[in-house]
Image 1 (cartoon, rainbow, N blue to C red):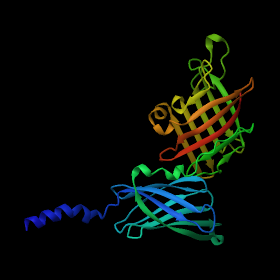
Image 2 (cartoon, one colour):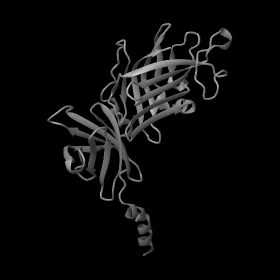
Image 3 (tube, helix red, strand yellow):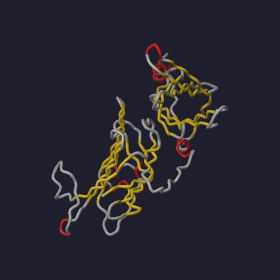
Image 4 (cartoon, rainbow, N blue to C red):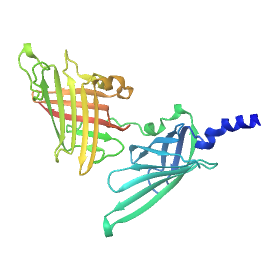
Length: 303
């Protein structure tokens, strides 16, 4: 009888909390009627059965989260700008089936209409080292300089699309010791009081609904390229109605987080009136969320 009691105690955690599905997984959906023909999602289930993952839809990398219940069922919602919401529904069993459902809501009140359609797929366990195919499934395209402002933007909840061209930009110079607190940065003339930093300001022409700010040490001895870890403060904001997206990073975070390692700010051309900056794989973390905005492209900034 004592052995039986000991065995019951050993199995109590599983009896109390249900089966654990801890591990890394990949789901594949085949779309027969439109592009892309194949959609891939990857997700991780932790020891507490919480679920987090990523999926690429319409060339945008999106994140999702959910919880696996005691019967192995799970559901995760992926929000998207506009009227569309995506949902993943699946179950751990011998078939491991999963559905990607698109829900479209238009209008409100009596004029409200809702439609849903979905595609089916299956998921399977993979090694943690393999969990990069979603973000790498489509290589990043190198943007060319067209002589105009142009930024490509990627994150999970875009409010204004992937291409940002309707903006103006200025670059302001300042001296740390000479700029008063809260004061505006200005170029300091004279060799004894040379500028030691610059601030790049980018604003949408329409109601400043998108803004980008980069605070950087000034280039010295012909320096034209900065890694993100060298920058002081960077921020990107989107605002539209009740919706807001805010991304921010500063010195210590930029140095400590390896996800900024490949980001780069570069001066590709400079005249007496203007500086042309290039951003490459430029990442900024969303406040309070494990989500990043990535910017690539060219900024024509007036001095």
